[in-house]
Image 1 (cartoon, one colour):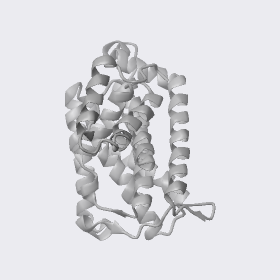
Image 2: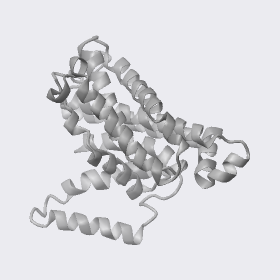
Image 3: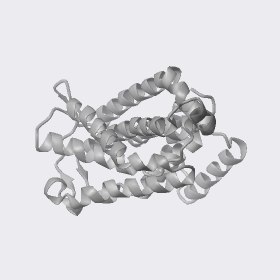
Image 4: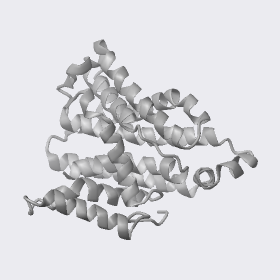
Length: 274
């Protein structure tokens, strides 16, 4: 459960840049997530790349492919972009399903090796959890650093008032595309960790429900807060497990918890911009 919390938190932390800072709702993050998973699986199994190299390369591949497929999307505005990203995410998964010689299509890829770092094979859940936490910590640090730079302030300006930003010469579409590419990079990293810990992946894992869950995590934790994304992942992914003691009423208690959060913290559990 801890590895699931960390993996989804990594994807959600990146999403705070585009959905939080730039103010653009994204509903297709399962696509970059899937691309990262498959890219690393292919690199390690077929090309025999080391894990750390495939981790970074898969993140870059997810970012580049997401950027290419969403290039025309940023000419749209408002909820039309959210709808378009659903289609882009579905297209990414469909490409994976159709590229049978490379991805084995609906059969999926099995035998993906456990992560291997500096010669150490991380074959236990505890080792994998520590790896996930380290990657999550690095992701949070990078996103916080981006937010504190000039680029982060431009993202905030685009999200605050797009018309005013364009009036002073900011290419809002280009900056949204950049924020989405960065978010896709982190989603790709999360996909890599999931693939090497499951050791088997197939297209049915990467559904619209996954995209909705990642977005819900940052809504729960705070759209503008990377640390809130981590907290949101703990609540949404870990909540059902924490309520396991109430086997018969766990779903009811979980729903009640979410309703209380919405009522008393509509801005998110951690709404500060950190």
